[in-house]
Structures are given as structure tokens and as C-alpha cells.
Length: 87
Image (tube, rainbow, N blue to C red):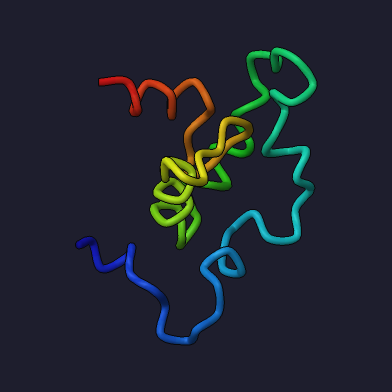
């Protein structure tokens, strides 16, 4: 298993360490208001790129039981995540 995908030793949830903490959730979910404009994903993608828990976030979004279908998660848009799930 990827060592970054294992629980943190400080017992604090990984979500508390995200680069998105403290930012408006609307920034990461422009698709919830219809089709986002072409540049809507640029800033959230840059924020996710520098995130120390990006891989955990993506794994969580792809988990079949929790499957996130909206917003930027782990640096990927909903369309990009759907493509990963397609066999």
C-alpha cells in the first residue's frame, strides 16, 4: 500500500490537512450550479496540486461506498473521476 494512503500517526483526520481547509467549498464545486465555465477548475486544480493529502482525497472520492460525484476531489473533476471508474 502507498505509505501516503495509510492513516496519519497524529490521529487527526486527513481532511484537516487538506490545502482546501478554510477555503470556500463553492470554489471546489462549480459544477453544482450547472455546467462550469471553462476556467472554473483552474484554481481548485492548482490548490489540489499542492495538497499534502491529495491522494487520500482522491481515494476517498473513488471509494465505491462514498463515491463523490460532484466537485474537485483529489485534483480531479467529476468527469475525470468517472473516466477512472470506467472499465
